[in-house]
Picture 1 (tube, rainbow, N blue to C red):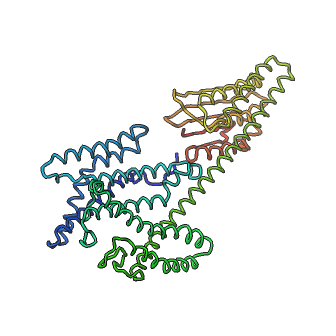
Picture 2: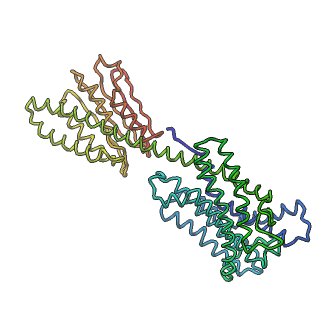
Picture 3: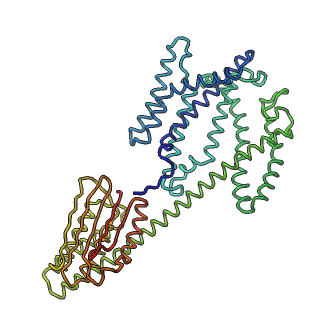
Length: 505
């Protein structure tokens, strides 16, 4: 049975490992830079650099195995087990590792430290939040805080916030950082907390610089892309972007030069001088614009695709609702015709038939509009329908049923099976003057339902197409309710019409 797969299964299974792998690479690069800064008098050749890179990377990978295992196993778990595995991998194991590390001689044999732990856990949480966002029913139907939390704006603000914390921590760790360049890339949260006035002093200044970067992004996305590019085209977009960059970069440069961190010999501008009109400052502003543009366009396209998919789902739900309502009149007309025939004959079976009709209509009204009902209830409805038809046709029609359903809370879309049965009576028993028969069978094969319906055909209809509107409606309902998860065969086989429905529940 065909299935729709958006990404190869093996690659999909490896995606949860990315947060930990990225944290390993980031920690490796930070340690490499730290080592080269501490040994500036030593000449590092190509082989020395690669050794300094691969040795900590491999050790970090080994020490991160519990984190990788937790990330890998979480998609296959559900409920409290998923949270338990995350806590064991990203909280309990690192805490134990740090406790053991403090007791080791030299405190340097293990590399899994506080900064790496925080980075890996943060990236993992962001990954699972993103996965939850991707599986959400739709961005428009979800709460606004959820959409805002996982938006591109929030992601950029989070990255900029991390950069602000990192730079502030490095500046706190290095005494008189502006006069002692280059800086050792070391982050110590404990030292930041102990020297909190100094940390705040650096935090607000780097936050202002981050705000400048976010302003470039915001103008690019909400004004240049959404207003100019979408409404006026590419030429005016490029023209307005050039004007914005040329006008804004010296103004923002002058703003950054007002920060107290700037000294006479060095500034916080990309040009590192006190000239806000320096070409390097314009180049950095252009790079920010150029880097943010494809990210903005990709995110806007993804957002449009999600909105379009949600609109398509809403249209499908409306169409499915309409098709379910089309089933009811067809069934009602057939049943009323049978009841009318019994009333004309003044049959004693008319009263029980009215009672069964009432039960059937109650099921249609209260259960038939639900997206899913229990398979057991649907079969009870089908049995009542068959008993009602047996009363009408009498001995002229022989009805055989073989329903084999194992115990289990199986769910199915309502009023699917009845459509095949109605089709069998409509083109078999109702048009035949001779004896006829209808055979029904239902069984479960693992999670697949197999329903077969066979009815005898009068000679004059054996070679005709007996699908009709009911069968067309059934196919459309299956496409909407079980896309890529069903097969339906309906064809004439000699003097019989045979239908087989295979449905993955």
